[in-house]
Amino acid sequence: MKVLLDACVIYPTVMREMLIGAARAGLYQPLWSARILEEWARAASKLGPEGESVARGEIALLQVGFPRAEIAPHQGLEQRLWLPDPNDIHVLAAAIAGSADLIVTSNAKDFPRGLLAEEGLSRADPDGFLLGFLEANPEIMTGIAEAVRREAERLSGEAWTIRRLMKKARLSRLGKALEARGGI
Image (cartoon, rainbow, N blue to C red; front, side):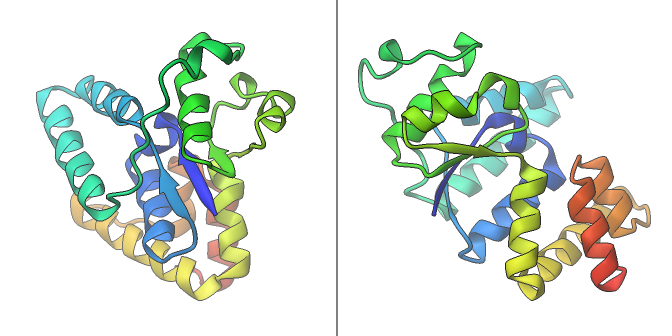
């Protein structure tokens, strides 16, 4: 399954690590555009120059790790498309150009299901998307979540329960389900 990741689900670190962990495990094929990655870097720059530098380093690692993930929409594709927020048309164009099955976004109102269906696409919120993988592949997703939790503890110097970490990352349902599976 090919899945276009919107910038709003790539920028938050824990959410991105969960999504990319699932992709690394072979659960789906991630897609993005150069513009989506640039939106991530610009958002990280609000944390200061270090934030942008870190983001650009992580972007480079993703590009190496997923060399076929970056999609360049065809010339003129964006001109024929419409979305409630014109600033999101590039996301839809990249999904179409990459033959994506799904767009994962936290921005549901700007990606109406009917408009996406006209292009053969659907959308999912990251919490529900990852929860589906947990239900189908509990061992894999539990392992990914534990690795993300350990890294969060290492970076923050703070103890995290999986439920609290996922809630902070706006993955509440996933955190609750992970906690119920083993209390990590």
